[in-house]
Length: 253
Image 1: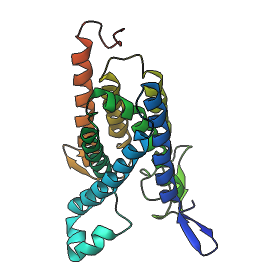
Image 2 (image 1 turned 135 degrees about the vertical axis):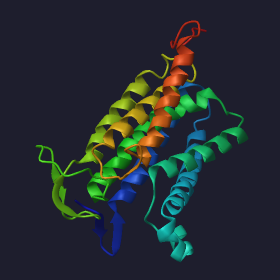
Image 3 (image 1 turned 45 degrees about the vertical axis):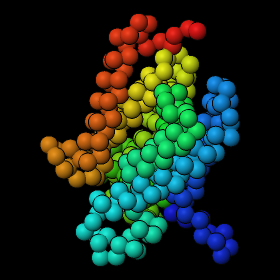
Image 4 (image 1 turned 90 degrees about the vertical axis):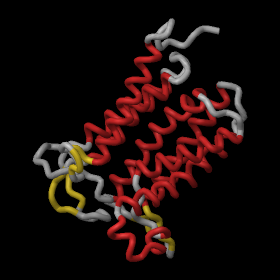
């Protein structure tokens, strides 16, 4: 594990580096797609900036609400702390910021959502690399399987062999990103984003069975409940589109 890289007096957090790289990759994917569909490529920078700001704010607020018993004693410190960021809060905050940007640019529609789908998947996959390298505690339950590994030098250390769930998530969402990119011109408007919701929700729902998060309702974790909403929304959306003339295939101009 390598939680940080020391370059002279400068200490770089590996999770932060992966976080930044994820946004760079997202920007590259969005820029490529904008060029393909004839939209200004510079919009990619605006979209990523909006997602970054909204994501950080959303992740921070979600963590504070979810951990109010810890945060209320030092609310100001909790707001500006560098730790305690949640993916779902970041995704929600980033999505709201990008939607606000799209309304300003008069590009609020299905094309925006489909453009975002592959970028969201690859960004998540790269972000999990940061979790793995830093050993931030997102690993899974103890296991005696051959792939089990310990995180003795991680941010949240453990000498016990556990499921390296960040690796599983990087592989899974990396494949999802490749699939979505391959299908970007093959599906009718809205179907690509619906497929992203279904696959991302399914991936997180299943991986939670290996992770250490506590159940909150019906034996499911909070992340699993949110994932079920994503999965269900994506499945229903795809079902509705499939019933239309031509099914899920893109309609030829």
